[in-house]
Structure formats: C-alpha cells, structure tokens
Length: 188
Ligand SMILES: CC(C)(COP(=O)(O)OP(=O)(O)OC[C@H]1O[C@@H](n2cnc3c(N)ncnc32)[C@H](O)[C@@H]1OP(=O)(O)O)[C@@H](O)C(=O)NCCC(=O)NCCS
Image (cartoon, rainbow, N blue to C red; front, side, top):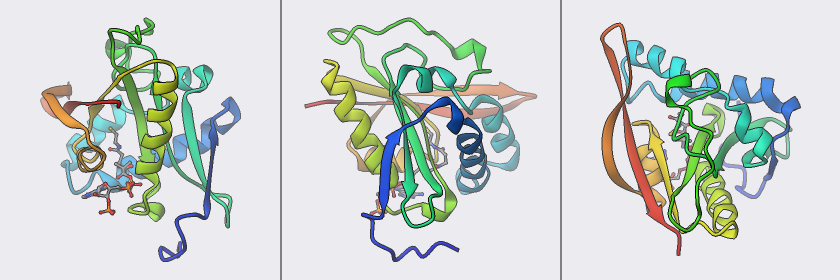
C-alpha cells in the first residue's frame, strides 16, 4: 500500500517511449476499472474500456508524459497532449481517429489519455501532467487546449480552469451510452 502522506515532490516525469507500453496499458486498466466506478455503471465502464486505451501516436510524437514514484519506481500517472485532430480514444478507436495536424494559429491542441493509478490519486499528479502539457503546447504556439473528458475526468479539468464546451455521447454499444464532455481552456 502506498503511503499517501509522502511528499508530492517524490515524483519524476519524463516522456514515454515504446518500451513503456505494457506498463502504461496496466496503469490505464487499473485507472479505468477503479476510478470510473463512482461515475459510470459497470456496463458503461465496459464500453469506456473499449473506447479508451493506449494511443501509440502520442508516444511516437513525443507528447506523452509519464510520472514515476521515485521511491518505488512505479508508474504513478500518465497523460499527454497532441498537435493532431483526434479528440479521444486509443489505437483501436478508428471512428474517432484523425491524425491530421492542427494549426496553432486557428486550432486547439488536444489533452489526451490522462490516467492516475488508484494508489496515487489526489496527490496533484493529474494537475502536474496537465501543467506539463500546457507548457509544451504553448511552446509550439497553441493558444487553446481541448479534450473529450470522461465524467471521471471533469472534476480535475474544472479544477485546472477548463470549462464545458459541449456534452456528447462518446460511444454507444449494445444500447449502453457513455458520455464524453468536450472541454477547453485558453492558454494565457
Ligand atoms: C481523472 C484523474 C486522471 C485525476 O487524477 P489525480 O492525479 O487524482 O488528480 P489530481 O490529484 O491532480 O487532482 C487535482 C484536483 O482535481 C480535482 N479532482 C481530481 N479527482 C477528483 C475526484 N475524483 N473528485 C473530485 N475532485 C477531483 C480536485 O480539485 C483535485 O484537487 P484536491 O485533491 O486538492 O482536491 C484520475 O481520477 C483517473 O485516472 N481517472 C480515471 C481515468 C479517466 O477517466 N481519466 C480521464 C480521461 S479524460
């Protein structure tokens, strides 16, 4: 069991590389299974699992961050941003995918695939990943960020200054719909 009282400074961040994929997939699985429970029904979580997941394009683009616990070396959180049009989803969510490059002068960059391991929640790691993404997107000239937020993600994004643009249905399978909230923020 992780000691949640340990200092927030005991974490390091770096960009993900392809050899991190298995560890990232395990983190996503734990986060989706445990942390969406208060927000979605078991049937909705199953649909959510089907549409979320690893997006190797983020890793290849060098825009996916990992945060490790320095004491144990465990992967504690992950998340990234994108200069491509896809709003959410993993490698396999073909219907939502659009790899077209966005224009910093007219388009909003994306926040993508935010996950914190259940052992490390509420220690500011989601907030830290968002800050890393915002700094990197700003450095490439973007002035806005948007994401397709899960209901579990909304409290974090609101706490970090994002507001709702449009609620949509992210996916529907066998009559089970999972909401996705389009949210955004101006980078100033
Ligand atoms: C969303 C998620 C990444 C948040 O990660 P986290 O590392 O716990 O977030 P932080 O500790 O940085 O939270 C920062 C602030 O966001 C808000 N917040 C985060 N999670 C919250 C929750 N479950 N309920 C209420 N507020 C929450 C709080 O204001 C929090 O500050 P506080 O802890 O000082 O009150 C994590 O819950 C998760 O992985 N969820 C499942 C996967 C998912 O749906 N991801 C979003 C994809 S769009």
